[in-house]
Length: 332
Image (cartoon, rainbow, N blue to C red; front, top):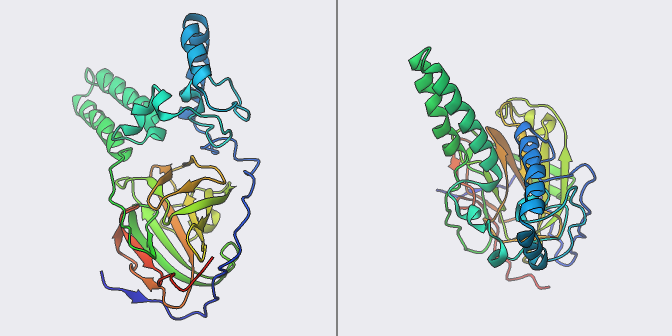
């Protein structure tokens, strides 16, 4: 794809010395899915029953998992007996199990995103049940309902991605279509002029979000809001969203922002990272359940190359959208 150079706004030299402080987790971010949801409530209710069963009938398992656990589960609103109890609350506590001690680590290797397994199972069961019932009443409708589990499986798919490793590249945080590329004279979180790239995700896109550069999570901001069509520019300002603030690992430690924005159908934002975590370029950090919008905000610098334009289609983690000039002149 041909490079397009951005030259219309005045740049501010990046701060090569100052590292940002880690912000405490916002008080109204009480889980990795702060907007809640019916499926989340059902899964949490199931967890209450499961913990009772384990404590009553599998005491040896509970004790073994307690010994293998790393850290204490302060911050989690319920008992933590095994890794399943941390699914919605991994951003609230430092408690964890090593992968070799996690009997459910295999779920991360499924071709479906783990954060959507409950929805995938519950919605599929509902559709299959309705299909069985309507088969005796109106067969064509039953056949349509049988197709929905395939759609849900396609929506929650989690394909492998090859992440480009060339220096200076910024990869797309989401799959979808570029619907906006804007120059901003001053962005509050960036601290200067910025480039904003808006990406629309249809229900047919992969909805997993990935970090655009190797970076630290500096802070998270959750904003309640409307559920306008994600194609509308106003959705970026008015819709429910999670603002993920990143600081690039390499000098000059650029500030980069990713906004997860809910849409008219997608009303559940998931962000399973916590402030202070370090992630490699292309690593997964969250998802938005059903069609939505993601925005990438990066600082403008002289020599910055814009590699995409409105109308282009991108893939999270594998499509380079920007390239910064070499950092070899910067020193810690």
